[in-house]
Length: 556
Image 1: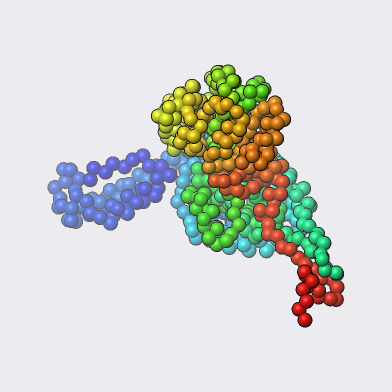
Image 2: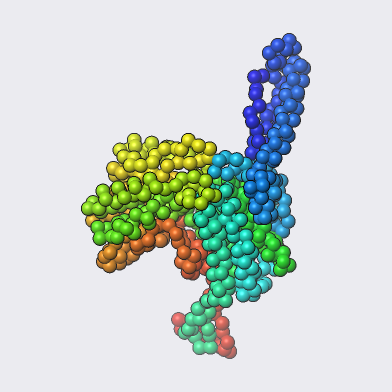
């Protein structure tokens, strides 16, 4: 009976209702000063009901207060409404907008203020969306591939018209700086352009047959319905890589965006749905179900259990190797962008830096100087190079990572602290003195912490690059052709992305994106990644009047 209501807001509705249930289904001792009956008496029951009613009333008041305090209702953020967003948004789309789940509020990591709310979907909403998408596939699959490419082209154009506003939303909701937010939307636009060309270029082989009057061909057909689950760090681009190619291949798409960037998912889906509607196509071709988390390895196991197709990209513990003959003037800005960009929250972020012992001290000092000049702050402001990390959980991860590095013998060369200001800001950090196989070095931590280690020869550095669980991105800076071809060869990097004289981050859409080992083995975006979204049939066609068997078999 000393219960005191905390300052609930929209994201706490489930807790309010839990408290209401508990109070109306149990008796409480009377409050101090109330000389009523004890815990099992009627007056305790009455008081519990009064408390429940008061909590409910307070919850309603606070919901109204929160809605009025949303950034979307601030004139400085009026551009959010250009994206079709409102104070309260439905998080499920399968031709129409609806949702029957919990309402959550999206908060900006810039200063912790609420942006707007989204009502999530339930299992029933999900099942309905699946059925609507399957029905829509019957229409979509009948369109010739070049016609599907035309729809994707229009989606790219619609994104161009919202490029700046959508890029600002990414910065506001995720935390990356404006150039990166706009660049991420541009990446979706670029993959739409790529998919348009692809729609006229699907190629299957024609294979010579050993039998007279026969021909073998490969036929590629869509899978049907493709599910896409994306993370908070690239809430637009990764969906774009998958959806543009999957749609062109003849699939419908069901998207589950990250639970902490729901407004971006809603805004992107509104843009796509407007194009589908303008072409009199079912909106469920591109469906959305915003819901909670718990994915990754569970997805792989669940899909494998039913022998389904999967494409996983699960992060990387990426390294750059710098040889003694590398151009240091290229190395320093490359490492700075790759380790500090997106506040260390790219899956391709450089987390390990292997420097030849002859140049180690020089590069460390130059990097420390470069780090000291990085402007940290509001990512919506010009000149800022490092915005906040995405969440309070990221702040705790940063603190525990720095503490672990120090405990294992590392020296904090610069950074290492959480910045005392509203929002989720940390100092990008350089750590030296650790062993290449220290547990903290082998652990991928999604924060801006860079471990620098010195090596004796290139073979040693390559072994260190390959010894971690993940195998996403890697890079070597060198002036030696011998090093280049050893690095990209069979005894070189074991990653899916193997770069030379460029950093580990900043992949282009024309190449296949993905990695090996615990990264998942999938490939997205360009090259022949389109094959992941289709099924292949080998077709033998007999255009003769005879039935010869292969391998000269006689069965008479």
